[in-house]
Image (tube, rainbow, N blue to C red):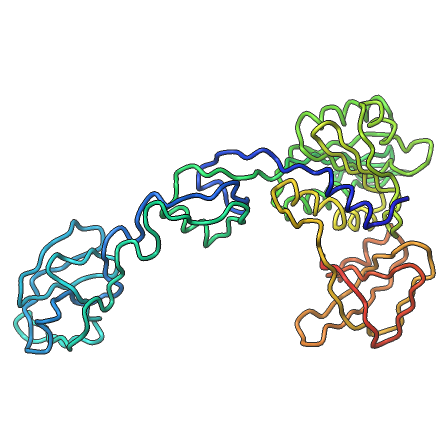
Length: 394
């Protein structure tokens, strides 16, 4: 077995960021920029009003009511106002030639005869100047930045039509075991529903991963070989569930070796999740998760999730530092492997408290229903109430 640190190091050393692609702005939310896009337009594209109000000349203010010469709406061509007049203007409308100030509507007093009294102000008040947000050629964001909704708004407003981004890896989920039946079936003798498929698909969706397909295969080496071969042609990461231990019907390693895979590790000193398998199939990856659902969830969190982010361009994906909190009860691990235990961590208070959730083993997904974290208990650890423990957020 390798340690968890060795396993993550091996993954980090071997991962290569996916080749960038050019996508339309509407399709890049949540992806990472592969280069630094530059502004194609000034933003704002002209001097525009920051308020609903009146456009005027500073020298005409305060002397008396001014005639309102017209209405200027956003999107209209630029107009002109004469000295000694004003114009009604809407937010975002282009400042008319001759005007150098906007007086907000709340600071104006309407007078009879279509006139308005405007208080004195300084030049440029309530005017957004052309290019003050960004100007043509200016760098809008750096390579490697995640395209958040607010960055997307900037890129859509001023950036190029196509953006060079790192795609999210495509994933195929392969669940193995002759005991598995679909969710639409009532399990017969010795059978169980394929709950891992739903859980893993949900984890993939939560990670913004395109799920190419899901395959469920029995304990048959030819059928598993066919499924993994097909998956390698459709995905960047193949995630298998089950079939990675040492039994006669644990076939995943045999299949990947038959396909010429490079095995990085098989077996990690953790509980649950000890039989975890990580291999490279050329430029593709296969991570073999144990079939027990809690094990699968833990291994996804520890290995699959950072691998996904590293492929998608996150250079710090495997750093993933633990956080610390105070345990509310005795926490011990008398075994020889690091345990990742279901826990509820109070993250809202100034003092972070960790409450361990009793669990019956790697099959006990029921215990995870209230967990929001994994408590980290190194081998041979005993922590008294009030002591400090590390945890990972789920």
